[in-house]
Image (cartoon, rainbow, N blue to C red; front, side):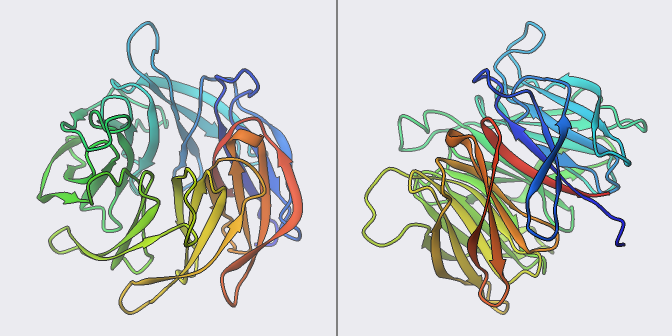
Length: 361
C-alpha cells in the first residue's frame, strides 16, 4: 500500500483560451501539495469527469454548444496509464444535448450518464469492453420552468447520479426545481419514470448537485439560486425521498450575490461541505448519524474567486478548493475532530479550474 500514488485530475474550461485541457497532478500526502505531471490531449471544455472503479478509464464531458457541426455537446473517454497516471484519448460521442455539465458511471462500468444543461436533457451511453463510449442509448428531455425568469426559463439538467443501490438514476434540474427519478434498465440502457418520479424543491431554489451519505439512508441537495441545502431521508425500497431540513450555506445577514455550486461529504461520513460562489467560501456542517440533520459549524473563505468545485482527497486529510475565476486551487487541511479546515499555504495555479477527481494508482 505504501507504493500507491494519489493522482488528481482537474477539469477546466478551455474557452477562456488559457487552459490546455485536463491537468494531471500527483498529490504529496504529507503537505497536500499537487505536483504537475502533465495534461491530456486538448479537448474543448472538459469540465467534469468520472473515473471507473477499476481506475482504468476517465470519462469527461465536453461542455460545448456544438460538436462535429451539430448542436450538441460531447463525452470523451481516456485510458489511464497505471504507471504514470497520464491520459490517452480513446474516443468521443455527441451527447445529443448542449452544454453537458455533469457525468457519472455505474459500478459495473456498463454505462455512463450525462446532464446536459442547455435543454434539460439526460443522456445514457453504453460502454464497450475496450472502455470506449457507444452512441447514446437513451435521451430524455425535461419539460417545465421555474419562477426565476432569467435562470429558470426552461429545464436545465445539472447533475446525474445513480442511487447507492443503483436502483434509480437521479437527475437534478435547476430550471424546474425538481429531482427527476428514473428506473434504469442496464440491459437496454433505457430510463423510465420511477414509482416516485419527481422530488419537488421549493420554487426558485435552482437545485444543482446532490450527494448521498455513505449509509445510503440520507441524501443532500445544494441549491444554486437560494443558497441552501436540503437534507432528505432516502428509502431504497421505494426510491422515495422525504424532506428533513432546509439550511442556509451563508452567514446571517449576508445580502450579496451568491450561487452555490458543489457539495461533498467527508470519507468518514461525519461532515458535509458546500461551496459558495460570490461569498467565495466553503460552508461546513456536521451530520447527525441518526436522523441525517446537519448543523453549521463554520464558513471559511476559499481564498480565491468563484469556487465552482472542491474535493476532499481519499484519505480525508485535505480539501482542495477550485477557484474558477482566480485560476487557483487552494489547499486546506481538514481538522478531523471538528471537520474544520485551515489553509496549508499551498496554492496551485490552474487556468479556469472547474472540477477535481482523485484516483489511487
